[in-house]
Each structure stands twice: as C-alpha cells, then as structure tokens.
Amino acid sequence: MPIQMELKVTSGKPIYRGHDHYWSVIKDLGKDNKLFTRHEVALRSNDRDDYSVADYIKRLHAAGFLEMIEQRLQVNRGAGNSVYNVYRLIKRQALAPVVNRDGTLGKQGLAQLQIWNAMRALPGFSLVELAVTASTPDVEIPRETAKRYVTHLNRAGYLQVLRESSNRVQGMWRLKPSMNTGPNPPKILKTKLVYDPNRKEIMGAPLAEECAA
Image 1 (tube, rainbow, N blue to C red):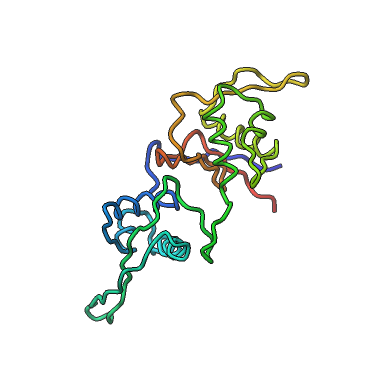
Image 2: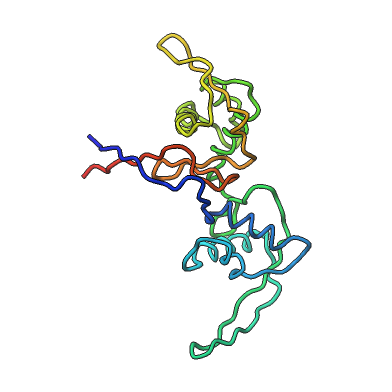
C-alpha cells in the first residue's frame, strides 16, 4: 500500500517559473511595443539554465506571438562572443498561450481552464452539472475529470461544501468568493500540489504518494 507523505512548502513563497509566469513577464517587458530578450525574461524567473524560458519563447515565436526584430552580438571576455535575439510581442492575450513545439496551438490545460471558468460562473454545482457546463465542442469534460479537479481544489481550500454526497444524493459545492483568485485556473501538479498562477503560490497541504516498486 502506498505511503502518503505531507510535504513541507513555505507558505506564500512565490514560484517564478512555468508558462503562466513567463507569459506575464513577457507581457510586462513587451508593453508599449518595447523590445526584450530571453535573458531579461530569465532574470525575473527561477529557471537556472534558461532552458524552460528559451523553449517557451521559441514556441511563442513559431506560433506568431513574438517577432524577432534583430540579433545582437555580445562580447564575452575569455569565453568567445555570442549572439542573442531581440523580440517584440505582437499578439497579446490574458492567458498564457498553450503552444506545441511546432508552433501549433495545443489543448493541454484546457480542461482545467474550462472547469475553472464553470466554477466561477455557477452559484453551486454537482459533478454532473460542472462537467456539462465546462464541456465545449472541442473539449468534452468527463465526470471523472471534473471529480478529480473538485477533489484537489476542495482539499486546497477553494470550495465550500453545500451538500455532502451519499449513495442517494449528489454532492454540491461552490467556489468560495475569497478563492475566486483570477482567470488562470489553479493547476494540479504531478506531486498532487495545487498551484495558483494568479497568486503564484502553492495552496493547501500538499501530499505525495510513494511509488510502488
């Protein structure tokens, strides 16, 4: 039987990485048609080797969100010269674009976004109501997907239980007004953490399961 372990996470400590954070930095650096570089984005991020920042910028450029204006030469003493790209933001939107490496728009994360939007719109919901409301012609939300997201957000303190579920009655929840933190959906990380990109914080008591041998 897997062992559950409670992880220690510093409360309120921001996490300055991930596509949501990189996109917010790019929007800030690129406002008023200003130019920026990958290094400037990395300076505001917790990305040690700049790989994640570089990868996301390449995707945005391939998808047409960024325009490469020029290449500049940087003289490095004793390490040889290097060339770096200068970009301009040409397509701005509120949420971080989900882009595949080939520049096509991806669907990863859309299920959580649609469920989050439905939670914010509904005064109260059962799992079936949430799944139906959150579904679109492009991305259908199964009841089990809605259930997993509700379970994690409830554990993290986002939801108020309006009615406990039983064999005969569906459970009912609502999003607490104080936890309607913004348009970005809280993300369920691989370690079963809930990360809120609006607050840039880990929410709730995180649990990790020991993997079976």
